[in-house]
Amino acid sequence: ASGHQVVAVDVNLDAGDGLTAPNRTSRLAWRLERAEADMEALPLEPAGFDLVLAAGSLHYPARLSRVLVELRRVTRRGGLLLVLDSPTFRRRPDGEAMVARRMRAQARRYSVLLPRESQSSYFVLGELPGLFERAGWRLEIHGWPGPLREQGRDLIEVLRHGRRTPRFPILLGTRHG
Image 1 (tube, rainbow, N blue to C red):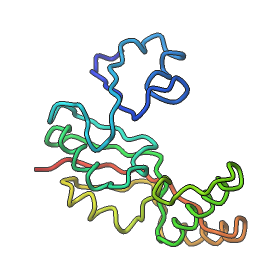
Image 2 (image 1 turned 90 degrees about the vertical axis):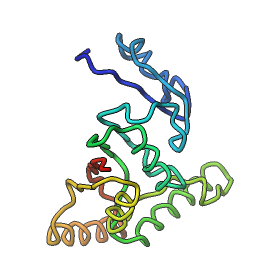
Image 3 (image 1 turned 120 degrees about the vertical axis):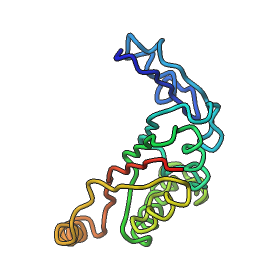
C-alpha cells in the first residue's frame, strides 16, 4: 500500500499458516507476490531486495550458513536482513534441553519419536556474529539484556520453570561486500 514491492516466500502454500493464509485476512493479499521455495534456494533475482525479513523462520533450517549466504545473494549491497522471533540461548545445553523437552512432548502427544534432525532449533548467542560474518553480513544484536538483568532473569526462570528459557533478540544484518 506504501508503494514497496513485497515478495513472500514459504515452504508451503497452506491456507492456515502458509503463503495463502493472507487471502483470508487482507483485502490487499492479491497484490502480494508469492513463491513456494526452500530458504537455501530462493527463486529470486540476485541483489533484488533492500530488506529481507526472516520472521520466526531462521531457526528451522539444518544448514543456517547456507541460508545466510542465499539471503545475502538476494539482498543488494548495504541491504538489511532482519531476523525476528527465533529462540536464542547463551548456552547450547539450554537450547538442547528445550529441543529435548519438545521431542518428549511430541512423543507423548503423537506416540512417535521424531528424529532430532526434524526439529526446529535455536541460536547460541556467542556463535551468531561469526556465523553472520562468514556469510557476508555485519550483525547487530538488539534486545539482549545486560549481564545483571540476564543473571536475574536466569535465576527467576530456574526457580519458576526449573530451566532457562529462550530470549528472542532482534538480529539486524547489514550486507557487505
